[in-house]
Image (cartoon, rainbow, N blue to C red; front, top):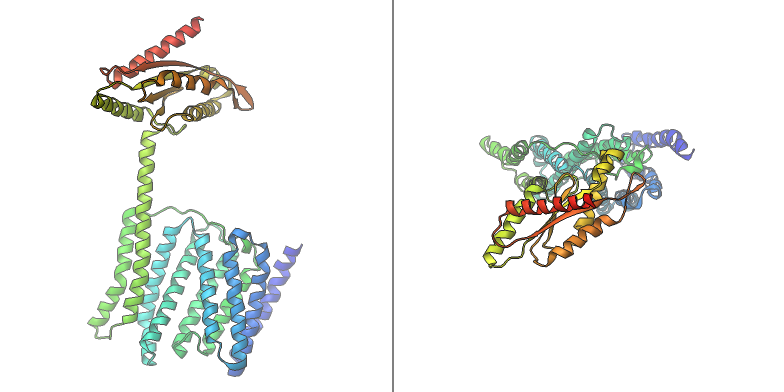
Length: 466
């Protein structure tokens, strides 16, 4: 009931009050604007603070940063209203709000880090072009110092990158939460407010009616997002979209890295004074993001290659080395044996007794479960340099370089299958026929496996006869 009241009554009341305050900004006297900003910041802070207790502790950091940012904003507006010197507190508030939005985007997009970086790079490149065409000429005409221009540019590019990440989260989701969409729109208004305030006053903290109104809308949207369904789950991971092909990613990143230097070169050709701030700040952000992206691409390729190598050498069902891998390890063990001049390789060939009956009676899934459990038991208790592999079907091979391992490994196999296994609610028992052979220094891998296999079949036949 409380949720319904919040959804259907709280949102309209909130928007009505906030909308009235925003509409009053253009007609308010300059001396009254700080008071309006104070009311708006309080109105925006209330739902953010109210939602905090309902957010899971592990996801609470972005919400806490949003609350702190709006509380600092309230304090700055109080100070500005009294003596007009709240600029430093505005900066502190903006840092907290930027960190909150960045933390929210990173948490929501932690399954799509590569896509977030790509979106941030695109947004920064677009912002750099807007800066070159619109903002920087206006700031230069207003004789804004280069140092202040660099600070403004850094703010614009950081907000643009954040906006790009947020837009990525909205576009890849099949049904993005309404709260996420509203937060993304709030970042749009924040970016617009920075641009308007910069052009009007040369500072994002200057007294610009247009900029202040856009900031007010951004703060109101942050608060309204916390009143919408799904607001408490914004820190949960979003979907995992497919990665673009490697070549496309490389071409994209190369092109993105070339945009800012290309823009500067065109400016020089046209006789326009070079934009040092854009070259320095823009290149730094883009290069850092591209370096992170390239490192991630390399890491993903290494992971994919390791996975492919593992799949080529291991059994998909049990995770044990497969037939090809045990042959490779056996060849290597025999080569070491010959190099050392002494025998020691031991090979056991095992076949499960009673497996087919279980498989036929309970089904293939039960058979797979049985093989997985036996494999886990066989893997446990071996020495670090010993191998157990699935040779095929219900056949397993154990390999050791210790000449006295025959009895120990045979006992290990017997013990592994001795205890019943719970399959499909039923206690299942199987046995094992084991053929063991020890190398004499003259046998190759093929002959060693053949003899172990024959020994296993002799034991199986003896068991049937008994």
